[in-house]
Length: 139
Image 1: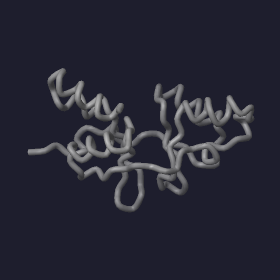
Image 2: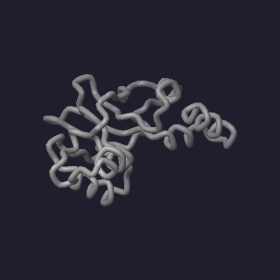
Image 3: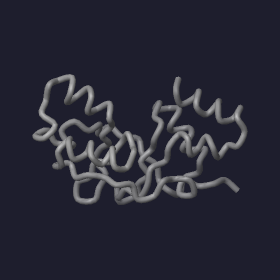
Image 4: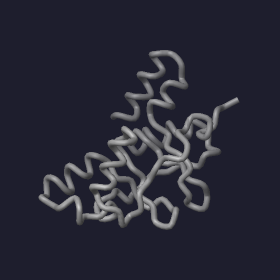
């Protein structure tokens, strides 16, 4: 039986409201030891903020991380997956869209987890299969 996304996702990731400062989002990244932080508006996923977004859209542009909001610089063109989907679909989406993490959202847009490339690659068991997964996603 195929495993579902829900079986391997990291549940209940900590997010920040779009109105939070970039500094607040960076603190969460540090505390949680993560690169991406979900951006929420009223509990709905509206974007993802990465450490790279902060480096490129704030630091490199000389913007103030205290007054710049997470929502202003977050990536909003998201690829998401439903927790009931199987892992093969997650792999297909990751490879097609060249992403290493998929936000897992319910039909109502509520964020329930994050599925990382490493989670899916590990599930495939052998080193050869893991290498193929990573190669497809990283092309």
